[in-house]
Length: 131
Image (cartoon, rainbow, N blue to C red; front, side):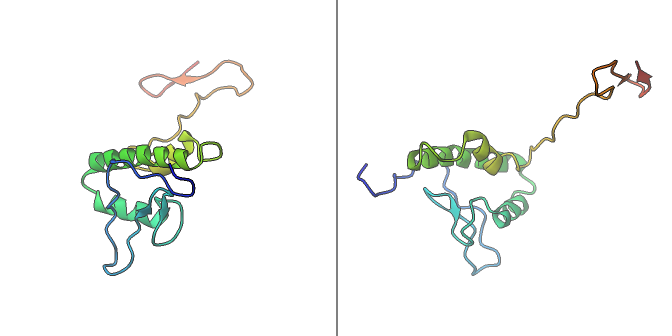
């Protein structure tokens, strides 16, 4: 790589979504290899891009998950090549690209019971407390 030039993006999914809305305005697409939004300059996917992607893929959540996962892979590669020491961690990139998508799961709540470490109470299959 010649000093001072950005690395050449790989041949992963082409970030061509979301489409520009309203038509005629700059689309909220990433500038590679920096992965910032070309419309607002925020880290991509920005809030507007996330909203537009959810609307565009409303009836195809699996397609959206695959698209986001592919872009996560590409962004991980690009951003690590740009700054291998101080760039975002894989977890940060996962949360930025994939975790907000259609298969997002909430945190698991801990079992109910004494927070000091005493006996825990659980509910049986009928919803009754079982100590």
